[in-house]
Image (cartoon, rainbow, N blue to C red; front, top):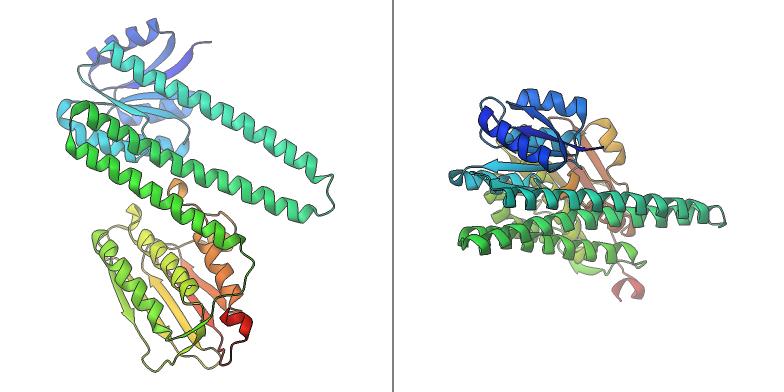
Length: 385
């Protein structure tokens, strides 16, 4: 059976010419002249490959790409662009487009883009088959082990790790593709964009490795006598440039009456960094970008605890279902942009301190995380070492 491909362009002549070329290449071609018609056809026929113009009346190609990826992340979408629309083409890669080709369309360029799309489809199919075989093997072995609960946790960690690595790998592939385009076109701007994408995903991979090491360690916190405001100030200084770049106001409200106590400075720094990073991401959610975005960190002295930290934002917030899953292993609200490790590590560090972490959040209203740590006046030798 011929493979289906959905072709969208508002120019009838281009649709006819490309339909003939694609039919000759063995595809069953579905055509639409606008984004709305294309979305209806896509939902009805579920083609594995979509070839769409970027600039169209009404729903443009970028919006169509986003809607298709929301409904079917594995669909391969190739963008068609004019020479003056290269910025839009680069933007489409950030939304997980497979490739882009420029007008006038040459058969060689179209063939290469389709080959890349089909290779990704084949790879995903093999990955799905391998994953299903792996899941079957895990289920089979689980029945043979007495400690079924422990094996289930191991299986979950492996599956979550594989998903996280897959997300980072996709980001690296996008970055290298932009680099290749920059080299091909001798375009320094594309080279810088591609390099930034690669560096960002290498950083994600590094952080993920550190988080996994922290999660795997069964150790007591490395206590030292510090002022509880210190990690807030350090995270503020570190994240302020990033917050400004994202259009988010970052503030701190420190309780100066707090006194030094024993805690793991590096661990609490990590916890606050994870929470502030997530808060900034929540504020930059495109659905809520009309708001004046703000993140605030607070420290407070409470009656029963040495310190209470608060990280509050007015971003997208979470519904009840999401709140129930937020501390689960490898659960992420960020889709392919997240690893699901940050909050898992944060909770582990707080648990090691024998503290508590709580969440208050409403969809569309923002979130507030609260961390409370106990007093430790006289650390044991094990705590210091």
